[in-house]
Structure formats: structure tokens, C-alpha cells
Image 1 (cartoon, protein in one colour):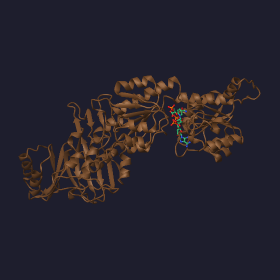
Image 2 (cartoon, protein in one colour; image 1 turned 90 degrees about the horizontal axis):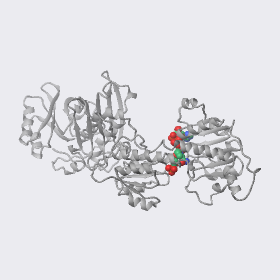
Image 3 (spheres, rainbow, N blue to C red; image 1 turned 30 degrees about the vertical axis):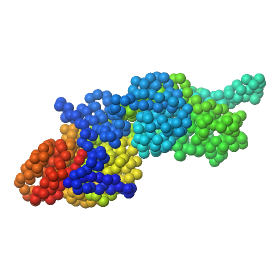
Image 4 (cartoon, helix red, strand yellow; image 1 turned 120 degrees about the horizontal axis):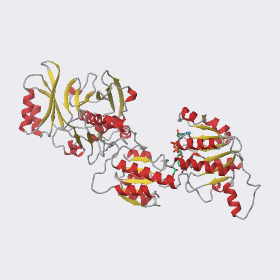
Amino acid sequence: MASTFSSSSSTSLSPTFSINNNNNNYKLLGSCPSQLSFFRSSTNRFPLNVKLSVSTRSRINASITTNTKTIRNAAVEPTTSSTKPRILVSEKLGEAGLNLLRTFGEVDCSYDLSPDQLCSKISQCDALIVRSGTKVTRDVFESSKGRLKVVGRAGVGIDNVDLQAATEFGCLVVNAPTANTIAAAEHGIALLTSMARNVAQADASIKSGKWQRNKYVGVSLVGKTLAVMGFGKVGSEVARRAKGLGMTVIAHDPYAPADRARAAGVDLVSFDQAITTANFISLHMPLTPTTSKIFNDATFSKMKPGVRIINVARGGVIDEDALVRALDNGVVAQAALDVFTKEPPPSDSRLVQHEKVTVTPHLGASTKEAQEGVAVEIAEAVVGALSGELSATAVNAPMVPAEVLSELAPYVLLAEKLGRLGVQLVAGGSGINSVKVVYRSARDPDDLDTRLLRAMITKGIIEPISSSFVNLVNADFTAKQRGLRISEERVVVDSSPAHPIESIQVQLSNVNSRFASGLSEDGNISIEGKVKYGIPHLTQVGSFSVDVSLEGNVILCRQVDQPGMIGKVGNILAERNVNVSFMSVGRTVKRTEAIMAIGVDEKPDKDALKDIGEVPAIEEFVFLEL
Ligand SMILES: NC(=O)c1ccc[n+]([C@@H]2O[C@H](COP(=O)([O-])OP(=O)(O)OC[C@H]3O[C@@H](n4cnc5c(N)ncnc54)[C@H](O)[C@@H]3O)[C@@H](O)[C@H]2O)c1
Ligand SMILES: O=C(O)[C@H](O)COP(=O)(O)O
């Protein structure tokens, strides 16, 4: 009997199985063995190259070459076709970055696209590179029709990219988080000092023919307290420079380590402490739902009268109308702003026109040095991602360190295969909603990053029964969306910690099985596997121990434990020219019943499967495609 699967319209996964052999559907859904290539070194017990991959529907997974520097990651299908990938650059990017992109793909620099123009171009593009001026909305991902694999943000803030939509569409988002840090910090200091000395206002005044020395008397910085709100990359650089100006620096950042601040001579304080004690407040936090309009009427009213505010982070962290009121009533003496809620701001904006306000048009990252740096940083990230490599600056996928990825490579294969096997054991009509994964390992639980494995188990379970493709970017989302809860348990075992994992067990709860022997004593479908000599093996089915390499396809039979069974099934397969790659028999009690696990290179035809089912001592059997 062969299996076909169909996806369920309910929120949980409901595989259905047909009993005929005409399962083109199943093949279409991506279980073909050619998805997997696995090369074994003759001199090494572990694989030198693992290439997991690439059906038409499921974009990558992992491609790892442990004896070279290439470490690829489970996020983006490497571009394999002879046509070069197409990269749309929608905002001005430094020449060095463009040159790097041109060596890899076809680069289309189309600036100032309207949202409609962007949506119509995007279905022709594999990657999109933006700065802060392009809104990468859900419409963009929808319009890409699955072709867009990477969005590269040439800069830090990704608030102009709909990350949720990117994740749902399995599109990796990478940014360039470091190259403009110093430029932004320098601009913050430029705004701080020029605001304190009215440089911009005095410049405008003198150019209009006036000489107003008394009007533009400033304030000194030395000895004043600066509150840095957000002690990240930019904030800490601003703090360092402000200390050099003789200021006392405090900072508020709920997530920054206190010892890092202390080492910089900065006290981390609460939000209220920061805003009530500071003479100057400099904003360096990201725009998030929590920080949106965090500076509002209520918070301005708590500030020290005469406070001065600098914002080179994001306009949206300030309620701009409230700031105008605070400037008008004198609580805020001055503001210097590089960023605005809406960019560019309306020309009649009261805030921009306010005489106590100094403004620049989002220039924080705009130095020649920063723009060249950002361009190269994002070009490298995008090219790497399009090549399927690990993304060190992935924003919507876990960053798995290269050494962890390399070590987990064979377990990644095992994880997907166990997921794929497990779901094929589920009887039609059962909704899968609860999966438990048990990792046995000699490693300390904190020393085992299983996100990649969990993603691959999810992929193995979901892909055969749905039209979704699952990768590291969208695995958790896809599981949640389908009502599939995956819990993980680590069991510390007494073996060599040199191997990250002893075994992986996948349990599917509250489902019926089409192979009763796949159920463990507690009624869950339970399968377990190990990596042996670099190759994934199935080692446990229900309560039966087996040992079959997970290459090709597998037939599982439960039969009366009596002589001649291997021969009978072997003959049926041999008559149809089906090559047996591996065979293992496991039993619980001698001469009662046993499980036979047979690895086969080819898929047996309908008649062969029927003949196996008719062998009198065979009580049940199932053919599983890997
Ligand atoms: N004007 C520009 O051209 C320009 C240039 C670079 C960066 N930026 C912006 O500056 C900001 C900081 O960039 P970065 O590179 O330092 O980022 P970062 O991630 O290194 O630092 C941000 C810090 O803010 C902290 N934070 C998060 N929520 C907070 C909260 N509620 N209160 C206080 N702190 C909070 C984080 O813990 C983190 O330490 C971002 O918004 C970025 O987009 C603007
Ligand atoms: O978040 C950033 O990196 C800065 O705001 C820079 O934005 P830009 O690339 O549009 O100058």
C-alpha cells in the first residue's frame, strides 16, 4: 500500500492516506528521494559535505562543507539556475556594494519607485535592497509570488520592512547593523553641540542679514547630565563621546547589561530616573510597539524644565504634537531632530518650523565612509544569503553560529527524516496538533541549540501534507499557524559529549496510527533516530528497536517472529528489481512478533506492496517515502 497525503483545511494538520499506489500527488508534494544528497568521506567518519535540499517547492535547507569555510544555512534556497539572480536596489547604495552585487547577479538600480511600481517589479526579483525610504509592505511580499528570497536593509532600522509578512512568506531579512554606528553617533553629538550653541539658528539669522549676538547665547555641556535612552551600538558611542565633553552620562535600557554600562562609566537607571534628572536626553532605541510615542504629554511633564532632546533614532518614538506643546510651554527648551514620524515631514509641520527646533533630513548614516561601509556590509549579506550561506545579520531567522551548524549537520538531516516518517505513520482523519521532541545528549542543555533541528522536524511534518514550504525563517510561524505545538525536552545521558546528540525521538500525540506498532506504550506515535557514521538511522519504532539507515525509502512490517520472513519479503522485492539497502529485525519477545525495517532504493510497485501484505505471517506493514 502506498500513501497519498492531502492538506487539511482545519487549523491542525490532518493527513489522509489512500491505499492505492497511484500517488502522483504525493510525489508532487515533495517527498522525492532526490531531495537529498549526502556525500560521505572515505577518510572521515563524519560527512564532509552535507547537502540538504531543494525540491521545486521547498527552498533550501542546509548545505555544509565541514572541511572548507562554506557553511550554509537553512533559510534561503541557493540560487542554482544558470540565470543570474536579479537584485533590485531601490535606494542609492555605495558603489563598492553595487560592484560586489554585480559580480554575483543582475543589478537593477531603480530609485524612487512608487509602491505600485515596486510591487510590479518585485515578482522578477530574487533580492531587494532598501534603505529607510522604501516601505517593504505585505503587498510587496504578496506581489513577489514567492520569488523574493532576501530583503537587505542597508542600515540598522528595519521598521520600514513588514517582518511578519516577510516571515510568513519565508523571505529572509538581513540588515547592515554596524557600518553606520559611528556616523549616527557623530551626528547625535553634532546635533547636541550645535543645538546647545544655536548654530543652525544663528547661521540662518546671519544669512538673512542679521547680527544677533545676544539672542543666540547658548548653554554649556560640561557638568550637565545626559540621559542616553537605548544603550546599544549608537547609544554607547554617544555616551563615550559625551563623557569626553565633560558630561555626566546616565542611560536607560531595559536590555543592556549593567556591567557593559559600568565599564563605560555610565549608570543604568530606570526610565523615570533618566527623564527626571537629565538636562539633555538623547534617543537611541529602536521603534517598536513598546517605544512608539514613548515620549508623550505624560512623560514630557515629568522632565526637568528646560530639558533638551536629541533624536537620531526614529521619529515615531516621540509624539510630535506633544513635543510641540512641551516646547511651547517651556518644559522642553530645545529639540534637535534627525528623524520624523513621517519622512519627509509636511512642509508646514509646526515641529519642523518651531524656532526652538533644529532639524536635519535623516542624515545620521549619511557620511561617505558609513555609506560605503553599509553598502559592502549589505551586499555581502545579500550575496551570502542568496548563495544559501549562513546569515550573520538575519533579522527574522535565528542566527545559528557556523560551528554549531557544522556540528549539527547530520542531525539536521535526521530531524527532517524523523518528521517526515512520523507524519506518514498518522492515520487519515487524525489532526496532528501536538509533537514532542526528546533530545538525548551528554551535553549540558544550555550547550545545545536545537532551533535548527526543531525547524527541520517541523519541515518534515508539514511539507508532505501541505502546500507550504518550510524553512528556518518560517518554521515556527508555520507550525503555530497550523495549530501544531512542538515541545522539546532534553535528557542528559551519560555518553561522550563530543557528539552533540545521542538520539532524537519524535512523538506525535493524540493521533491514530496506520501502523499500530508505531505507537509507544503511552499511545503516541513514537520514532527515534541516531546518527551513525554520519548517516541518520532509524533506531526505534514504537517499542521496537530497529536499525535502518534513513536513505531511500523504508518498509516497516510487523510479523509473526518465525524463520523465513526476511527471505519471503526479500524475494518479492527482488522479483520486482527493488534493491534492499538495509534490513533490520527487532522484536520484543522471541517467536511472538517482530518488526522488520527494510530500506529500499526504489519504490516498490503496487503489486509488490500487495504481495507483501498477503504474506500470511505479516500482520501489518507500511511503505514510507523519505
Ligand atoms: N538617524 C540615522 O540615520 C540612524 C542611523 C543609525 C541608527 N539609527 C537608529 O538608531 C537606533 C539605535 O540603533 P543601534 O544601531 O544603536 O541599535 P541597537 O540595537 O544596537 O541599540 C538599540 C538599543 O535600544 C535598546 N532598547 C530597546 N527597547 C528599549 C526601550 N524600550 N527603552 C530603552 N532602550 C531600549 C536595546 O536594548 C538596544 O540596546 C535605531 O532606531 C536605529 O534605527 C538611526
Ligand atoms: O536605521 C538606520 O540605519 C538609519 O536610520 C539610516 O537610515 P538610511 O539608510 O535611510 O540613511
